[in-house]
Image (cartoon, rainbow, N blue to C red):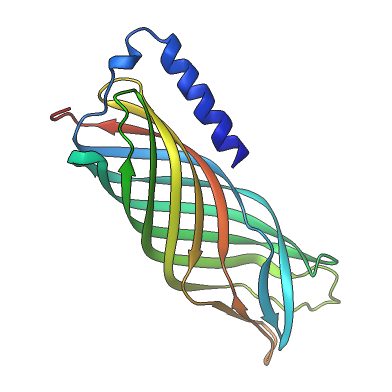
Amino acid sequence: MHKSRMMAGLLAAAALLVPGAANAQSALGPYLFAGLGLDHMPDRNLVINGASRSSQWKPGYGLLAGVGYKWFFGLRTEAEYSGRVSWVKTFNQVAPWAGTAWDNSVMVNGLYDFELNSPVTPFIGGGIGLNQIQWGNNFRASTQAPPPTIYDGESIRPGWQGIAGVSWAVTPQIALAVDGRIKGSFGHFNFTGSVPGKSINQFNYETRSVFISVRYFFGGQT
């Protein structure tokens, strides 16, 4: 979240330096948005072949896009698609693993803008939807003697996310935003191994992200 606080300060400073920025307010009505971000999954618990383990992950990246509507009184609603990519590193911080995890999600978000009569607007919100988690690229213990057990697979579970950030209205039609997100799933994910009787179960998915995005408003009352 340190990156979010730093970006919020930069946006606020830019609003003071750019002529006329103080008068910019995002319009009410529909808008499109798209963004890129950094993603990191903290240690996640799982059960492999009946034994409890923890998994460690390398930093990854994400993207998001969608459509929203800004209502009166600072309320916004959105329909969002997001995708994230990360790479497994170790189990129990010692056993090397290899493989890629993809998160493809659709969310319906509700957000609230703290309107301060300024181009800089803090906001909070959350969403619910569906997470599709895929493991691939021969998801396996990299030191296992051949032929290794492969845990490639995919599963879908209901998902949730919490959002907090700040936006800067560059013009009434264009706004830049930076936000931090915590995202996870209701329920666990399970992956069947390529060797009969072996599986990874109760994978508890949760991740943290920082996104920078742009919104384009189609006009309407400000």
